[in-house]
Length: 462
Image (cartoon, rainbow, N blue to C red; front, side, top):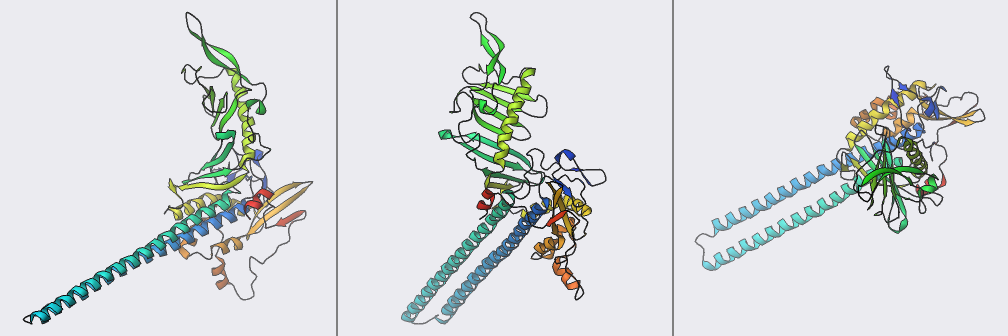
C-alpha cells in the first residue's frame, strides 16, 4: 500500500494551533517534515495529494462536460421548437393561399384543393413526429452520456479510497455474520464536507472472521455479570456471573463508538448481549436479548466488568483494523445525501476538500527545504530515512487542463503559477521547476514515487 496505513482512530488527528500552524501529537508520528521535524502525518500525504488532485480535476472536467451537454440539450429543444413553428407557418401560409385562390372555382377544382390541403397537413404532422423522434433520441443519448460521466466520478474517487482515507473522515468498520455462516465487512466514512462513502472489504483466510467467530477466539475466559430473575414466591433480580467465551460474534461496529452483538447461536435470533461502548459516560451499556431477557432493558455493567468488555472491544478492533486495509471497491458514495452519480454539487465538494487540505499542504511547504517542492521523510530504520517529494510544478501541471475559474479553486494550496502561465512568462533558457534537481542531504534517499504497493492492491489496480 502507498505509505503506511495509519491506526484507525487517530490517522487524521491534526490540530490547528492559535498561530494557524498544525499541531503535532508525537505519539502518532510516522512521517517527518522535510526539515526532519516531527509531522502529524501517518500516511504518505504527498502521494495522497497527488491522487486527491487527480480526483478533483476529473470531477471538474466532468462538470464542465455536463454543463456543455446541458447547453446542447437546451439548444436542441430550442431548435426543435423553432422548426415546429416554421412548419406551422408553412402550413398556415399554404392553407391561406389555397383558400384565397379557390374562391368561386368549380367543385372539381375545390375538391383537388381540399386534397392538397389534407396532404399538406399530413406532411406537416409527419414532420412534427420526425422532429420529436430525433429530439427524443438526442436527449436520451445525452442523458446516458451524463450518467456515464457522473459515474466516472465514482471511479475516480475509488482510486483514492482504495488506498487512503479522506481528511477529517470519521470511519466505522462494520462486520456482520450473514446467511451460511459467512461474514461480510465494509468501511463507512462520513466527512464534515458532505461526502459519505462505503467501501467493501475482503476477509482473508487468515482473519478471525474467516470462520465461525466465538468470543473465546478473541479473548479467552471472559466473564461478566448480568441480571437474572429468580424465586418461586417473590421474583427477584440479581447480578449473576455469565461466561462469554462460547457466544458467537454476529455483528461488530468499530468507530468513535462501538457496538458488539453476541449470540448463543449463529442464527442471530437467539439470546445474547448487545454491548455499546463509547468515550462519554456511561462508557459501557449492555442489553440482554432473547427469551431470558425479561425485557429488562439496558443495564450498566459492574465496575469490574468494564475493563473486561473494553478488552474484548480492543481485540475485535485489532481484527477489524486488518480488514480495513483489504479494500475491494467503493460500493456507495453520497454528497450531501445525493448519490455521486446524480450529484450536481461536485464543484462545491472539490472546493471544500481543497479548503481542508490547504493547511496541511502549506505546513509541508513551510518545512520543505526547497520552495518548489513538498517534502516528507520516513524513517527506514538503521539510521536511514527516505525522502518523498513532489514538485509544485508537477501538481500545477495536473491543473492545466482546467479553465481559469476552476484553477482558482486550488489557490488556497499556494502551489504558485500554473505551468502554462509560467511557461509564457519564463525567459528563454530558464530552467523548469519540474526538471530542476537538487542534491539531497547526506544520508537521505530521494523518491518522488510512492512506496511499492502490496500484491493485493496492485492486483486490484491492474
